[in-house]
Image 1 (cartoon, rainbow, N blue to C red):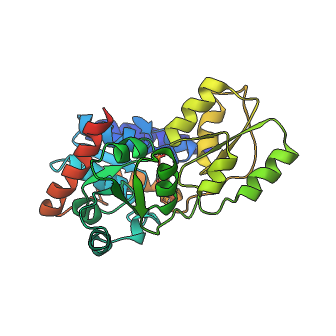
Image 2: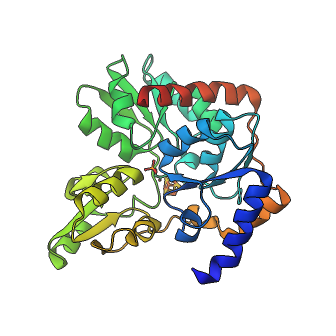
Length: 304
Ligand code: 13P
Ligand code: SF4
C-alpha cells in the first residue's frame, strides 16, 4: 500500500480542491476502494448515492454503465470516467434493437433491464434492476410474463425465486461469472471441507445451486460479516475478498477467483490524470437520458 501513498495523497488533495466525490464499486482494487473512495458499494447503492451526492464532480471508479447511470441521475454534474474503455460484457450484449426484438416476441410484457446496460437500452426498457433487487422488481410487475435483459443467468436465478412469473430472457452473460462451473465448487468443497461458498447471481443457476448463499456484492459482504465463517470462497470478482479481508481477520478467504478486465482498467494513475485534466467526461444525449432516468428512478423508488 505504501507504494500507492503518493498517488492516494495527490488524488485526495485534488479531490478536495475540485470539490469532487469518488464513487467506487466493490470490485475496485483495495488502493482505490480504501484509499480514495468517498462511497463504496454495489450497483444499487452507487445509483442511490449518485442521487444524494452534493459534489459538482463525480469520479466513477467502476465501469462505463455506472458512470452513465450517475450522469443520467445528475445531468447538470460533471461525471468523470478514468478510462472510457472500461466496458462490460453484459452492457455490450444488447442494444435498443434487441429490446424491440424482445417486445415483438412477447407483446405486452414489461422489460426489466439490468443496470449493466447502456443508456439507450435503459431508455428503451420499462424499469431497471440490480442483482440486489431483481426478484423484488420482477415480482412487482403486473404482467404474468416478464422480459429480463441482458443477463440470462440472473434471469434464470430470479425465475427460480419468483415462480409465479414466467421470466423470459436475453442471452447475455458476464465473462467473470459465467466461467465458474458446479464441478469447480464441488471439487473445492471436497478438498476444503467446511468452506462456506458464496456466489454472485450472475453465475449460472447450477453454480448458485451448489453455493451456500447467493447475493449482490454488498449482500455477499453482509453475509460474510454477519456469519463470520472460518473459511469462505467468494465465487465472484477477485477484489471482493481483498477489500474485506483486513476487516475480517477471523475469516480465511480461500479458493480461486476471476478478474474483471474492465473493472481492472481503473487505476490510481488514471483517476489522478482524469481529475487533474478533467478528461473522460461522460455525456448522455438529453432525450435518451430523460427516458433512461424514468427506468432508473422507477427501480430506486421500488427498492425503498
Ligand atoms: P452488484 O455490485 O450490483 O452485485 O453487481 C456486480 C457487477 O458485476 C457489477 O458490474
Ligand atoms: Fe460486467 Fe461482469 Fe465485469 Fe461486472 S464483473 S463489469 S458484469 S463483465
